[in-house]
Length: 110
Image 1 (cartoon, rainbow, N blue to C red):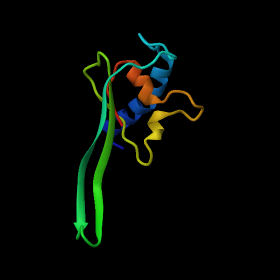
Image 2 (image 1 turned 30 degrees about the vertical axis):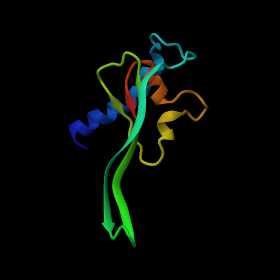
Image 3 (image 1 turned 135 degrees about the vertical axis):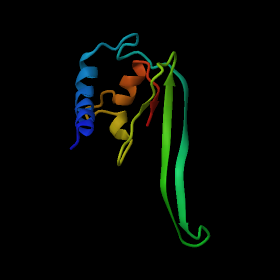
Image 4 (image 1 turned 90 degrees about the vertical axis):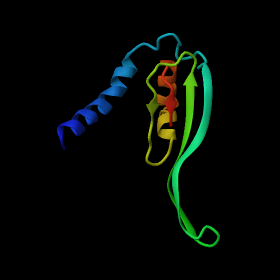
């Protein structure tokens, strides 16, 4: 593991602890999240073979986004390997990272 990879792994490991212990800012945990804009879009993609008979569709992605009212300048992209629900909910039913960061004013792309 190189130095850059090690620093990134450390940052990813520390983020949950930092945000779990910080205050929620202007919006409390039970307050509605105010959304300015939301939507979705597809990115990339290749079709291998003949689309009219047999084909393989690959190298594509689907993104859903929410932008809070008065957003910060930094956008967050939450990439998952299997299911977006990893970012949406906690195992115990609490708010997931998407809601936590939206409350703090970050535009979130999942």
